Structures are given as C-alpha cells and as structure tokens.
Image (cartoon, rainbow, N blue to C red):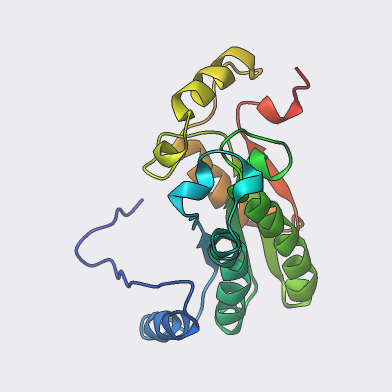
Length: 205
C-alpha cells in the first residue's frame, strides 16, 4: 500500500465555507476525473460546549457544531457527486454519543445524530447513481480531537472494563472498515451505521 509522501496532493478546505469546498474539488479535478471514495472525518465544537451541562449550550456553539459536523457532509457529498461517475462510497465518522448520553460530549452528540440521519437521506438521494453513504461509529481512540473531551481517559478505561472485547478499537481497524465500505464486498450496504467499538454498543449495563 502506498503511503503518504511528497507526491501526495494535499489541499486545505474549510468545510464551513462553500467557496473553499468548491475550490477544493476544482483542485481534485486537476488530478482525476473520477472519485470513488469520500471520507468525511470532520468534527468540531467550541471547547466551552464540551464542558459543563448540555442545557448551557449557546446558540452560536450549537450552530457551529451542526454546521461543521453535519451540514458539511451534505455540502461535500453534493460537490463529490459529479465526480462519482461510476458510483462510489461516502463514509462519515460518528460516535455512540449520537444515540446515548455520554457526559461532556454534549452538543457533539446532537450533531452526530444529525450526521447519522443525514447519511440516510443522502443514501436515498444518491442510491440511483450507485453512490453509497454510510457511517462508522467508532469507539474512543487516542486522537488529538478525542483528547479535547473531558474525561476521555476514564472513557477508555470504561470500554476496557465493559466492552465484550475488553477494548475499544484501533485506528487501523477503522481504516480497514472504511476500505471494506469502499469495496465491492459492501456493494449492497448503504444508509447504515457500523459500530467499530469492541462491541460496546450492544451492552445495556
């Protein structure tokens, strides 16, 4: 497998700006006229919204979280669609906080719920063009973004104690799931949320 190197094209894209999205895909067209996979791995909420109580979330923080976490998938999918001339796979990253209360995840959980719902509506809209849209709901992983969540270390330990596999997941396993969703093996899978979390999602207690 080829690794990222000096010849890998990297372009900035502020997903909260339509002009940035348009410019990004124009640059992509300079490299290829066909796109097979779009990975949406974007998450942000103001730090103060991830502390304290959800009921204290400001209107501005709520709008920002919904725009960047959820609406950006719609905007990026719309821009990617013309390049997916032979069908394709759109994969978004989510988390269990979309379905169940995770203390301190707060507005991010609400935004992830909107993201997951968006994948279903996009799957319906784009299915006739053989474009599949799915979510991977990952367990907690040691990333820079995750470390911004209060109590993250305790969350990892909780998974180790309660998940059927006694652990969460590795980034390599998330990557493998994304490759599967982009493959012919997942040709009939769309509008779904796949949990890659050591089985934690199935537990009641």
